[in-house]
Image (tube, rainbow, N blue to C red; front, side):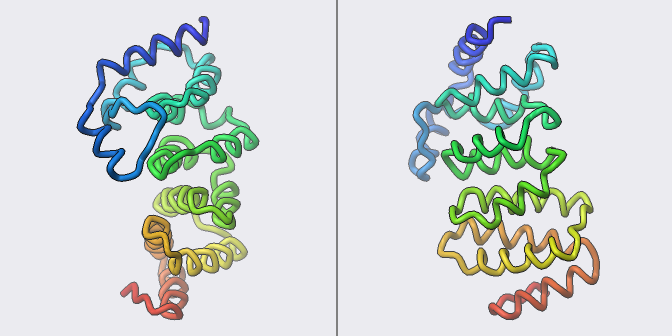
Amino acid sequence: MDINQRVKEIKQSFRLMMDGATAQSMREKGLCYHLNWGATLPRLRQYAEELKDPASQRYELAIALWKEDVRECKILATMLMPPDEILPEVVDIWMEQTPTVEMAEQAAFNLYQHLPYAADKAYQWLSSSSDLPQICGYHVLSRLFARGQEPNERGINEFIDQALAALQSANPTLRKAALQSVIRFSGLGILHQRLAQSALRTIGIDLS
C-alpha cells in the first residue's frame, strides 16, 4: 500500500461527510483548524470501523494521518493507531502538536486511555505548565478510574495535589475535567471518597 495515496483517498472521502454548520459552530466556539470538514464524531467512528486497511499497516497510516493539518485526519489517526504499538516518545510529539481541547479529548478517549503506560503519561501531563496536556491527563485518569484502576499511595497524593490546583484554575474546561476526574476517583471506594471530600473542602468545594 502506498501510504501517501491512501491518505489522499481518505482526505477525499471527507468531502462526503462535510457539515458546514458543524464546522461554523466549531469556529464560533474557538475550535480553529487549518482545514475542518465538520464531520461528526459518530460518522468518523463509523468510517474508522469501515476501513479495510490491514492491522499491520494501521500504525503507519495513523502516523501519516496525524501529520496532516486537517481535523478529521488527526481524529481518525487517534482511532486507527494501535495503542500497544505507539511509543511514549511519539505520544509526547502528538501531545505537543495537539491543537484544540476537542483533539485532546478525542485522543484521550480513542487512544491514550488504552496505552499500556496510560497512567504514567496522565500523571506526567498533570504536572504540565500548559492547560491542554492537563485536560488530556484528567480525561485519561477519569477513564482509568471508571474502569476500577486504583493509583498507589504516591499516585493518590500526586493526583489530589494537582487536582486541587487545577480546580482553582482560571480555565473552566480544565476545572471541569479535573472535577470529573475527582468524582471518578471518589467512585473507587469509601476511602477514596473520604480523601477527595476532605481535600476539596480545603478549597470550598463540597462533593457530598
